Length: 154
Length: 79
Image 1: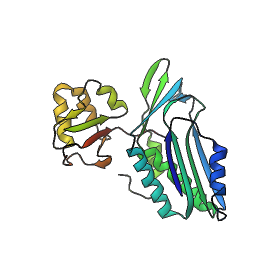
Image 2: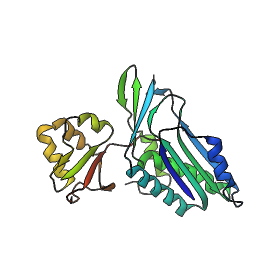
Image 3: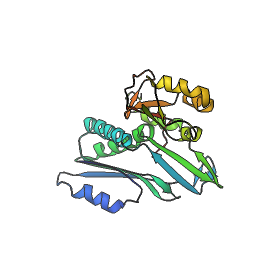
């Protein structure tokens, strides 16, 4: 059972964990990852972050990534939540939760989902620094992180 | 007509660009934009920019149908 949500409002980590935990008595492992808004970008502090996405296409791309994870590992359920709109430092921005029978599947799938979300999903960050707006550049380290999974990236 | 969308920093270059055009491929849209919007067309020529048609990543020579939605996508930065 997979859930993909793109939303402006915050999410509740405890509720998301509880949902995955209680889904089935076969669940033996739940791995969750939460990404937060940092207060700096390129060594300068930021005032706020604005997240744009491509409605419709983002959901399709995230579903493809989740489908890949399901093919690769034995998963019981996956939840992916990504916030859009205006965010502040320390805000929660992204959640990935994976439930499986055994821990290796959940650990690896969670990392895989984040690695590919970073390079595939159609989100764009713009930071506000001292009243100036600037689009965030993509990082080579993110592309490198995804190459470890031995899947063609384009 | 073809509807066109610009995301991320491309949107900043496309403030006065048309949102509907007549064109047979995404490459032709880029070509049409060079006349009145050279800065935008130059940005679209960056090798990292991807193009989608009806929400599927495609090549620049993908044939377009009337009513297609073409989006120009700079490198993504979510997560």
